[in-house]
Amino acid sequence: MKFLIPLLSLISISFALFEDTTPPIEISGNKFFYSNNGSQFLMRGIAYQEETAQAVNSALGYKDPLANITECQRDIRYFRETNTNCLRVYAIDPTADHEECMQAMSEAGIYIIADLSEPTVSINRNNPEWNLDLFDRYKAVVDDLQQYSNVLGFFAGNEVTNNRSNTDASPFVKAAVRDIKKYIEDQDYRQIPVGYSSNDDEDTRIAIANYFACGSVEDRADFFGINMYEWCGESTFRVSGYADRTEEFSNLTIPIFFSEYGCNINRPRLFQEVGTLYSDDMTDIWSGGIVYMYWEEANEYGLVELNSNGEIVTNDDYDNYRSEINNISPNYATRSEVETTTLTCPGSSESTWRAAVDLPPTPDEAYCECHSRSFDCVVNEDLEAEDYGELYGLVCAEIDCSDISVDGTTGDYGDYSFCSDRDKLSYVLNLYFHDQGGRVDACDFDGKASLNADAQSSSSCGLGSSRQAAATRTVNQIK
Ligand SMILES: *[C@@H]1O[C@H](CO)[C@@H](O)[C@H](O)[C@H]1NC(C)=O
Ligand SMILES: *[C@@H]1O[C@H](CO)[C@@H](O)[C@H](O)[C@H]1NC(C)=O
Ligand SMILES: *[C@@H]1O[C@H](CO)[C@@H](O)[C@H](O)[C@H]1NC(C)=O
Ligand SMILES: *[C@@H]1O[C@H](CO)[C@@H](O)[C@H](O)[C@H]1NC(C)=O
Image (cartoon, rainbow, N blue to C red; front, side, top):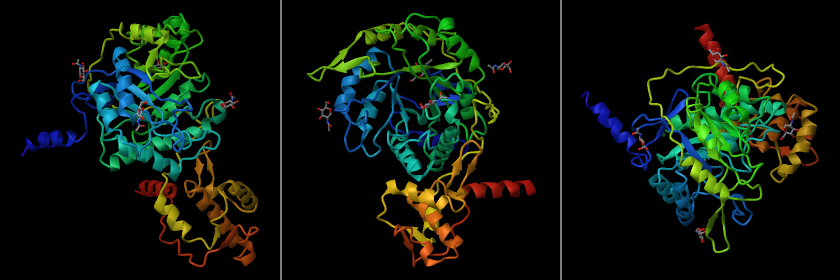
């Protein structure tokens, strides 16, 4: 019987596609490792996402970089020439078929690290939420990409908090990390790591890395990327700031890497930082980096462009990068059993870091729907979403709207805060209606709301997940 166990585990891992050429990458301590042989994996990456207006699919609002095999094959030649083992993609269409591109990438030894958001469905630093729409989008991307062994990881956010003025947005991103990790586990998918990609803001960079890396394994990010533009032109490990950053992140308990790099103040870019990034000065702390970016566009960060015949034309940046990246000879660590260490979360009272350690609740569709059926007063179907704001303003001036509000600084999140904007509006209209003793004229709002004769009891809706968590805590304390 004993022999059955390894046999079964062999069967279960063979489900993922493309294992042979791209065995899954796993994390141990602060490093990535190949799962087949325990050798360290350092990213030699390129950001791969076209944003020019003519390329963008007008219905989608972005262009999926992994949906057209002709284009993937056209570009793989250049990825091979630059010894690329990883591409960062910023927005994919979860309904498109990625199999051909993923297979071609796998055959070239290339892994994909994918952002889960897309331009119009992403966590907004000025009005942060972690809600049903976002969770659905994130889940759809995971559902599609999880089948490929060459998916290296997912970013739950990119530069959401970008300075001291919006650190309250980070709890929402960390809740996304938590919920996507749980989703992957619940679906019995391969344990694909989930992390965050940060900007390099001097006030917040240390606290935000600690914030995402801290706490329980269930809640914390699996890795941390930082978009790094400190080394410009000719520089050195010390002068560039790389030495200071390496020292600052030396105690981080999860992998850290440059999720973008390549300062373009001086062009052509020399890419002399490449030699340093993959040297012993850095590879114990950093897991390599991702050059920003493949396509030359208006922002002038590209390595290649398309000519009018639809052919790729490389530039001097490309030549310089190719020569530098092919000239590295890093020392790779080997995987040893590293104990999982935990990091204490940064306090939320510093002048430059004010993000609650308590995270927003998990968006729960059944909970929202159950409650929405119970409202005696609801917003009219034909009211446009852009008119919701005014009505929220009116009602919330009269009654307590904390059930639908969130505050990432204090960690106060309403139980109904993750529901749709329409349901949240009905929620407060209904509250107001009852606050007014159920007077018929308290459910009108100039004809924007009306009574719902089919209202059902909410007694079976259960507790919101934040109250459930609080109840569990209380029960555990009593035990
Ligand atoms: C480990 O496996 C990977 C993927 O097959 C391969 O690229 C790498 O060279 C191997 N490392 C060692 C030290 O054998
Ligand atoms: C795939 O890309 C090629 C080259 O850009 C283009 O000619 C072709 O129309 C694309 N195919 C689809 C289905 O979009
Ligand atoms: C923080 O970033 C936002 C958005 O980019 C910007 O509008 C704001 O001025 C910045 N604030 C500080 C204190 O740097
Ligand atoms: C890293 O940890 C060591 C040992 O605990 C400590 O002395 C050092 O100050 C820490 N470095 C940073 C940058 O936090």
